[in-house]
Length: 220
Image (cartoon, rainbow, N blue to C red; front, side):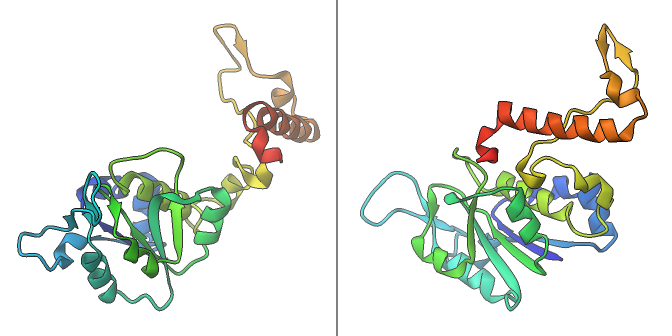
């Protein structure tokens, strides 16, 4: 997979990509990630990429030319172009699985007050990571990239992905490790019983219970 991230602040993203699972995925050629500063494509001499809003209003908007010009330099023939915006579809695990099947993702990070509306004509998908507003799209881009890259075959052991949260619209079951008791807090007896059928039944019941308590909307 190839991922191009269009951003005004590549350094906000760079260090995250140089650690842990994403770094291993890059080093193992599971994914290629490119950071592109679309400030380099502004037509203005002072490298300005934003401007005042027609009709008035607070803040500054990303001008359309830097994004259009930047995308003109990329091969978009098999790409899914994603715009990160508060009014996009709310991102979830199902979308992550769909995006992990794509060959090429192009992710556009916003900043300032938002985008010139004409930029929306370039995109295939508008995504939001939640009902809140951030100063820019870089953190949101990392959420999308991290959730997608880990699903690429060969990045994480398939067994580790099988029972994760949001599979089958359920949250994950409680998990424990050694010691079996700590400060009076004990691991449930069933988990150390060695009876794998009962363990599977307990885990399934706990998934349903936890989802009912914390995210009943998922069960609907």
